[in-house]
Length: 449
Image (cartoon, rainbow, N blue to C red; front, top):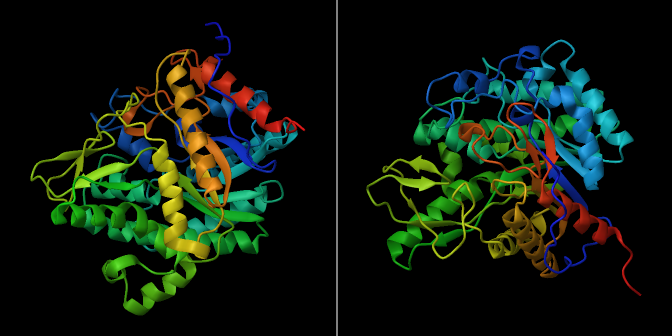
């Protein structure tokens, strides 16, 4: 398969500061493969069940990154990014020699001039552990100590958790992701224990001398279906559940709107936990894909990002019309990224640390992926608009480097800047890879006098 020639993009992007951090993101379970060389995870058990993954696939081989990581670092170096956000697999670290893989990966990144940004949990919980149990948070902190001791001399930026909201909602409330539980609001202990794990991990990282520490939450504006009071109430609850519930314990040290009363433990225990959860951060990671239009319940199932929502939820998700959609069916609304970031700045003020957009991307097929180029161009411009409006934005990471195992969607969605052949695992940079490379080169050029 031939590499496509660079596709001309729109006008040059606006200039960002010289120290702005440009990167791409991946996650361990989605690209690594080599499943037999690590402990089992909850995702291994989940994908072994019939019918839970769209194409019936698993991540047993995925992108074979464990074998091909040097080739992938070469792609990163060729792209010209300043940083690579990857995740460390807890099950792999638990296995003999497993952390050695990350040792080699980090060395390879440093030699290529690409700064490693390590995410410590991206949904692949070791089998046998359970976020419903408080002890899992303590176990997570112990694992973080091991990783920080081994890699902390080279990893400058650490992310404790990736998207605890989605892991709670999809994995434990709705059952469409691993571990496949459908507990609805009985899943709230999962949220609390993940947040507690985050706080304990921050303390472990600080004790190990970590330079920069943060968390990554997914966020998006909640748009009203109408001005009807019932729709307003439903939208407020959606915003509470998907945005505020996971941001405010970290940023403000409190649960919003009495949600703390629903968390496991006594009031004094929850208060003590919140003191841990709200350990000061060096940056706040935001993953952004699309806004959500929300109204009152319709007494019928609705859909969130292609995932069915039960009718008993106190809100329903409505279609955003008049917008192009990605292959995932998600509306393309770049200006909502500006809205989101400015809204966070307005809501949290000085309690909001510098922001890094740790994921932003789209699913499109084909090597001549002009839609992805247009998507990234528009969202980077929206990010610049938020910066110009006063939001302290320090970095932007594209999701993702490689076409990968996209969770319950299997291999049916291609988010990568690099095409990966399902059979041979051959890597072929797409037009978007070349466009992003040229955009980064332009950012590094000295400004015209």
